[in-house]
Length: 153
Length: 153
DNA sequence: TTTCTATACAGGAATCATTCCATATTAGGC
DNA sequence: GCCTAATATGGAATGATTCCTGTATAGAAA
Image (cartoon, rainbow over all chains, first blue to last red; front, side, top):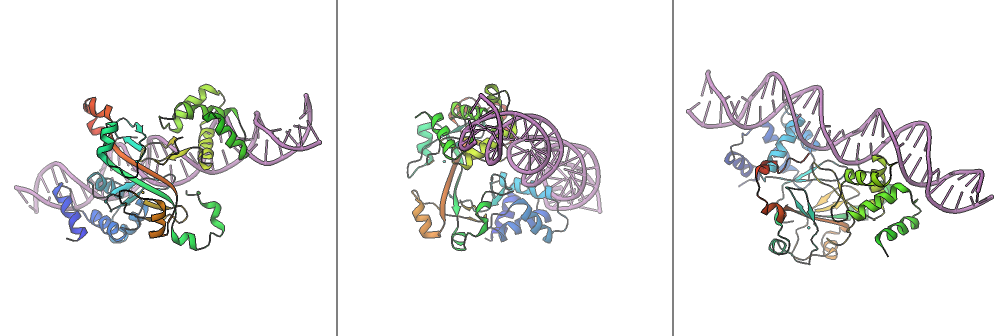
């Protein structure tokens, strides 16, 4: 099944309505699935497909999708959130209830069960980021922007 | 060497000045090293130690410390940033230059060299979060807040 | 100890992603 | 086609963080 159909089916299952705005957002998410688009990009692109679309709705839609596990939200410092459709397995133990954060030193290979046994923490969701430089940026001379590295906003 | 001394020494090495405000922030960071304090908490606690201290300075100081690798900034959705002093090893490949993000499917155990070989991405920094519930929150009845789970701000 | 100046600070305004709210619209079951 | 709960709009509000301008000061040098 096409990813789009799959999403639409999920929405139906959950009793969510299929609106032109949501279809536009879905299209954009699929077309940009590798770009990890932010809300603004989604808004800009989706607006082309659905003239009557507000930024608020894009946020609401993205949040709704995230809530239903259709996409995943990635948050960053100083830059807008990004959204991804790749939900594959891809460590701070953050309690979503009380906000407490428990460090867990990771052995090379690690599974939820170990964490649960050793700390009693129940893992619901994961996020792993490695920060650095992609091959393009390593090759294409560093030129001037060297000191702009962290100037994001 | 005490952690505080170690930090002060690092600041001296980098030519950064040792001010009462910074000392207060350092104390708070050390005292709360396991709490992953946010800027507001740091401000509140540090203010007790150094009457003449502004929130702006706390932010500036935390950013400065992070820039020099003394602490690490953790960013979250909807809640303020948290800061940690635990810099131990603890995966999205995010290019800090062009902002591109490359997915890298992780085998159980994975090292930077593999990433570099397979993708050409040079890893500078890492972040791994597992989200879920801590043992306390699992035990202490879920009561009413069940639907507040994601109501963070 | 005093001087000097680059660095740091205070305090308040500004920014900007995101959310909220009140109202208007509409998807989709009947 | 009707009805209504779910959505969308758009503008205001929020809130963490940054920016800005004038002031203060750490610490090197005299």
